[in-house]
Structure formats: C-alpha cells, structure tokens
Length: 72
Image (tube, rainbow, N blue to C red; front, top):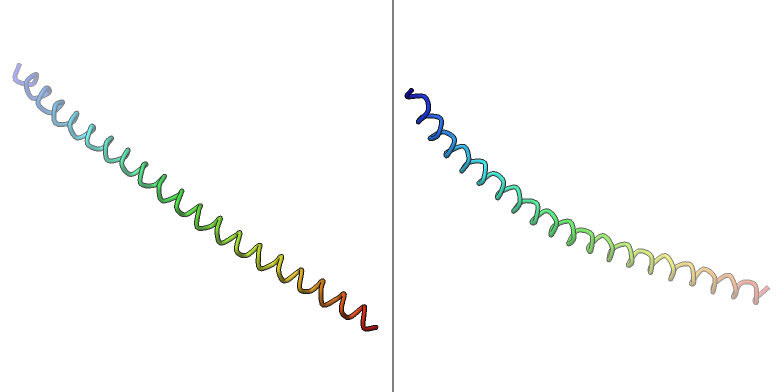
C-alpha cells in the first residue's frame, strides 16, 4: 500500500515538470515567430533593394542602347 503515496508524489512532480516544459516550448515558439518575422522583413528589404538595382541597370542599358542607335 505504500506504492500509492509514491505515485501521487511523482505524479505531482511530473505534472510540474510537464507544465514547465510546455510553457518553455510556448516561449520558444513565440521567440521563433518574432525572429522569423524579423528575418523575413530583412530578406524582403534586401530583395527590394536588389530589384531596384537590377531595374536601374536595365534602364541604364536601354538608355545607352538608344544613344548608340541615335549615333549610328
């Protein structure tokens, strides 16, 4: 009969450990979401900057091409 009190004691400890693990996982998930959001914003801004550079280069090439055609 001494097994029953031991089970309730370990159950209480296990329950507390599980609750702590769950709250820790929830915190990590929130932090991960924030990090991904910040990372996505960074990637998005870099992409936009690169697209602007490519578009500007393309416009410059078109302008040079027009000048060459007009000189011929």
